[in-house]
Length: 154
Image 1 (cartoon, one colour):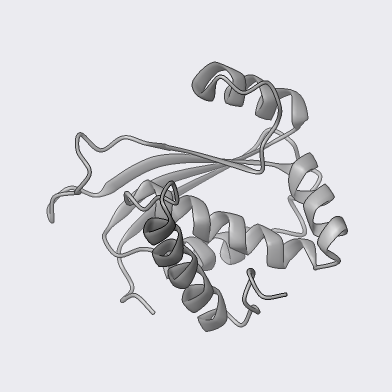
Image 2: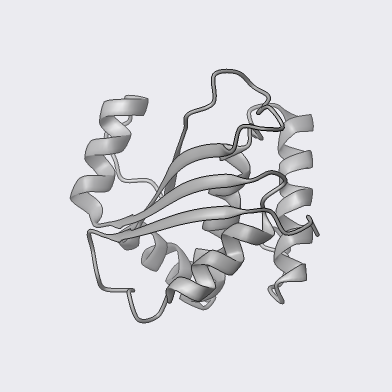
């Protein structure tokens, strides 16, 4: 598991349905566990309309998706003295539907999406098979360190 790095964290609840189920301390712990460098992150929890609008505007896809990451690094590699800066958007409707479909707790799925988004913020991706294997391996290791099962098992 990565060493503990400095984290400036803002949490925005545009959709408050999971505000109590996903307390700030838990979100912070999940994000912190996935950091390999200091970071300044905003995690925004939104409803389907905002999630769809963001996905359409920035990715050209006209549907709400589970997590979007907007990383603000100039290049692929973050300098040692520059913190990772990113906005991570979780769509509550998609998160709830996916957790129900997979028959897993909402907190387990939220932790996975946050870890996934934080890894994206640091330049990890899953476009190619090798990248996907690396990112999924990191997610599994981080989540297991947090007490959650492998999200890709089964």
